[in-house]
Length: 263
Length: 347
Image 1: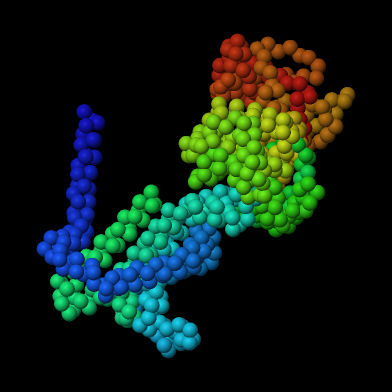
Image 2: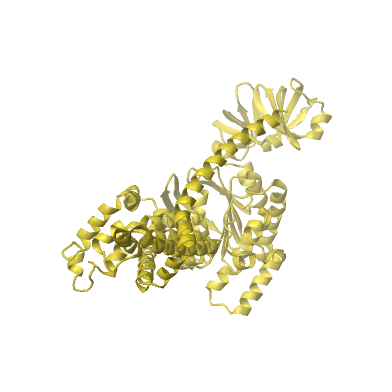
């Protein structure tokens, strides 16, 4: 008897939790699903046309490509930092961790202005690099803006991944004859690879979705979000929605395949 | 084989102070010490995972104090065995060979041989997470041994196992070292393990190597009270010693103990609990200490019984359950405590 009562209480809690879960999932699904549904059901033709529009395809290709580059840079430079943060204790570590998290907190329009003032032709970095590379209204400008906002999304999961690898495994590998490098890429890296893939996926996704930080330094060439924004201003919902839906479906495809690789 | 000279290290909450040690080829050496004594740190320093603040480590005639771990050719077994979770058993065992310039055939052959030796061939394609503790340990040993290490370092290798597996693997470790002539350094806090396995034992306490000797020396002739207490000698007393007719008589105040020692004056002495015999009737014999007392506490340490007897001083004695029952003992029983003068160790 006692057991059933207890089981009943537990059950009630789960029912409430279930309702809450349903609400939050519905919230996300409705927002993302409505435009897709409306577009595909009521204006399939417009959608197909958009899929053939070279301007749209170029913008989406550019967005995916630049975000991939930003993620590549985050991977090369961020992986070592993630490892150090996972393994070492040192003075100022907390500060560095907070700095890495800052792009999450900073409003992206502010980030955009900051990025602009550093990278435009007379900026702190833009000026000395101006003979070699142009950031204003150019692909490198898009990449640095994306890199800035996606860095924490790469570093945090990767650091967690490295933390989950017992340092003893590296030590044992060393005792078996592996150099520091070999212990890293034969043991630590492959064990943490799911976290690294997660970091890549998150950072890539963050880059694709960035708008505010990008437009100030590089309105052109237009990334997908800029194009959607511009079309919304010119032609309203009907003109912008097909692009939005296409980008959403492509991103969804990418993330589903990422998830399946991680398993 | 291994010589450690004046080793110092401060690391986190652990430290090692002036460690001097020599370990012979083929020896099974046990470092025994309480938790936090710096045992693992000592082992990791020999393996090269930390470099010493001061001192030298020589292995096989080479000064390897500053050599990286991969150049030392030393096998390391951790308490949790640290198998690589992303590799199966065979891949774990092959790992070290694949790093060296060994031909594919040779890798196959050596891996097969070592897995046969340790009886783990049937586990080849299993993932480490599916193995029992005992199996994991064998895989870890195979992985370390396959590259012919000069010495095998074992960090509490038995403590994560159930007691039955512990007993079995303890025997297997001993056999393995004897058959293969492998030098082993084994760290433990378990004195039974140390006693059973060690050719020699080093007692490490508070980062200092307090005593090095055979199990007999460590357990029966500890150098000081602290070691005596750590190796399970509960009967430690202080008294005044004087020598009469070649035999020391040590006055503890309430009673007088006969011992074989040349020391006079204020001394400390100890008697191992299992050296004490409990008698119902006392009969005096020469060179034997005999005191009448009363059982004040009985506690079961299956298959043994631990008795505390008040005979002026408190004595702890360990007897078998069988003799406990035969002597019909209980708390309050009047008994005699008896032990040989030669069982008394004067510190």
